[in-house]
Image (cartoon, rainbow, N blue to C red):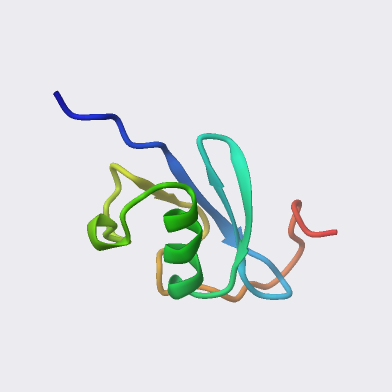
Length: 79
């Protein structure tokens, strides 16, 4: 039996750069690159060697995919 993986959400890019990351509803912070995202996921208990950024069964990308890290306009999470 496979252990279910937590749902990762990478929120839209912030105007100041970076993207808020949540895992199973828990805020992990703002990642500014794919490398930082992988580190956040490692700290959340995921094996970095098994994480594929394009894996839609694990990561929900909002406001652009893994190639988008800067934003424009208002960000509801930014304060």
